[in-house]
Length: 318
Image (cartoon, rainbow, N blue to C red; front, side):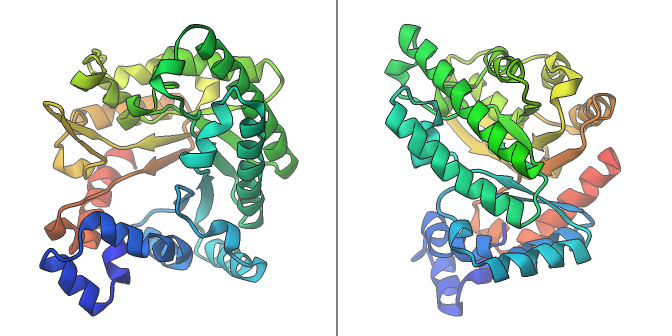
């Protein structure tokens, strides 16, 4: 949402006339945008919010940031009364936390621990991770048993590492594109296996991710009616931080994270009001709103969209 502000005048002109595509813009300035955490904090405060989740999706700059740079951000967040959580990487190497190849799993966990070190330095109280991904042909039978066993092993290891820092560990449900960790029952089983080992693992439920199961290419699996009832299946003690975003399905076409106030996906105002009630009843402490736009006309007025959405959500959740 903030990336156009990091383009040069020439790059902005190229974006407007089609010489620079939106994906190429993302590749050009994503790391710079993610590194400017003080600006993200300023935007959070301008929107009247008080929490920021840093996106460790690849590429990111977090492991190369100096201790001095991190300390300045930590102090600035405290001054602005903004709390921080860190979303660990979830693609490439990070996806191998679920692998049954032990050497690969160890590499993935070692990498994740470096991001947890960063989270501790910046005074994050929460980290969130995805449950890895596997090829579709190895997400069945004995292979799937091996995947789930090694996923539990990895999450145990990362929970233990987070506990050293007093950081609350969350695991998030995947999209249907990731094959595993999509359905509530499989996620709740994984979480229960970890919690039986003595770790207070939390479930960062992402309702937009859950909507992806309704795509025709994934069997057009039915949703609850109303869809937010899926939250009622999650035990209260598992909820702390949740992700809030929507999903649009148009045949086999789709769009992640449309602005919620436009009501273009599954979540209308009545659904959000129900979600607000469920969140309150279940003691949810942090709601991370994930919104994205990709049309040029929207990218060029991203702050206006964020303000409109924040005002809309404030009427529902506050």
